[in-house]
Length: 299
Length: 326
Image 1 (cartoon, helix red, strand yellow):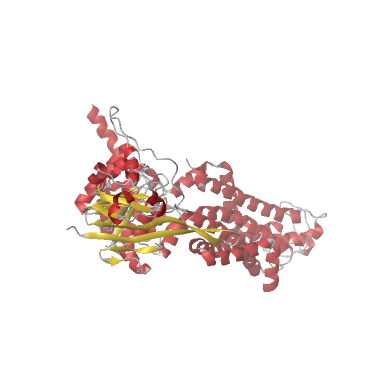
Image 2: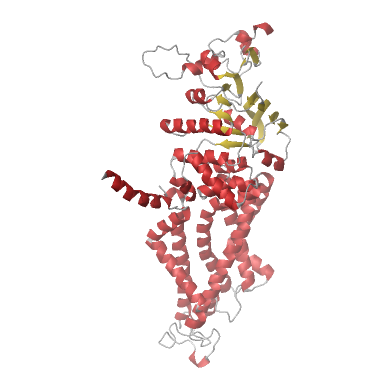
């Protein structure tokens, strides 16, 4: 009897044991349990789908002007109303998602790539190169970020592309410092010493051992930074330093609408709501990711 | 005459202490001072001493994971001191290290297979298929199962992880293994398993060990010869039996008298040391041990004793045994 039960349980046990729980899988499991984070991720996903399917969703083009129908209140024909040129605000907000998300993703990606490269070099090699890179970061952080962005756009000339570049540049020191501090602690870990003892090259140690173990806070910060990047893009747009005239950038729409704020509040309300929702979505998702990826939260 | 695999000559490591506003160098921590010894092929040399005596630093300097301030390490007749980084990487294939903390020495984001395969990749050994096969074989050699290959380190217990650490060190078929307190983070019952594994592997693979530990019982069990370190210096080195039967240096005597004996009826004469180990940033003049020594003489306060062969194969650094020079 004893033997027969043993035989039954043995294969099941072995199969169960073979399952590898990767750190990534573990993080996903903890993320799934977080309701707020899931809500955030859903909002983000929703806006991504809206951005991709904009031509299908939007009933009108971004620049279809119908002057007789200017400043109409929201109705069945125009869900979000129309603006001072008689353009359908719903269509413009839908297309605006493309611009904002695109700017957010690209700018953050750019600053992560550059920031990580500089931060890893500074953290791993230390000495004068660390001092040099860190001081450059300090100087950049000494300026209020939006002021620095305005200055950069002023030099490069106002356009959406230059706004994106400016936002990427002002975010570099945040990522650089974050990854530098992670590298400083990771490089003292015994498995890095072990990697050196094995005889690995620096490049391999950096890419295969230090970088993957330093990325968790970057993913979190990156998600949160997309939210700020979207706001910064909107702010630059509002100041007339971002997207050019017919482009339905949300900040630009707010800026155009501010003259009609009293008579036609919907012209401001919906682009503003869109900004708020995307930013909220990214922030909730970022918080959830932090909880899921933070090693201190693990038992 | 046994063949010498590794020879260490006058090894020193000073860590600078910086202070003041501009981080000027204000002193040195003399972690390792004038350490010289040799290791024969196929033997195990134990290095013991209390924490902070420089035994781990010595171990790391042998592989140049920490750059020595001065001194020379000769491995198989070649000096390691002047090798450039590329040459050094090649030498590391032949000398590997097992680390103390099995929870920190394995990359948490790599599977066991990747951890074990990496040394082979780094040294360009074998094709993908052969490498995977070797990983599976090595897992069996160290007492794990080949199906463990796909798991991550955090899914193992401490003892199992240390087996993985040992397997990683063995992958490139090294000649010398430097084991830096490989069992001190483990439970006593697991310690003996890992020690027996190390012994078996030594026999099967003709390995040479440098075994760093603070546990005298462990060192006695595994070592052929033992070196005792105090405040960065080697104070006594000899065959294990000689050292445990007839310790010469007063520090060794004090250390050995602190080893518990599993028999309550034996009345042991304890040599109690007073005070703490002096700071290595400000070592005492003369003999480093004179501040705590029970047999301190006048000469100990002024002159540092050189390590010399007191009897064949038994070296000690103490004025008690240097009468001929006086």
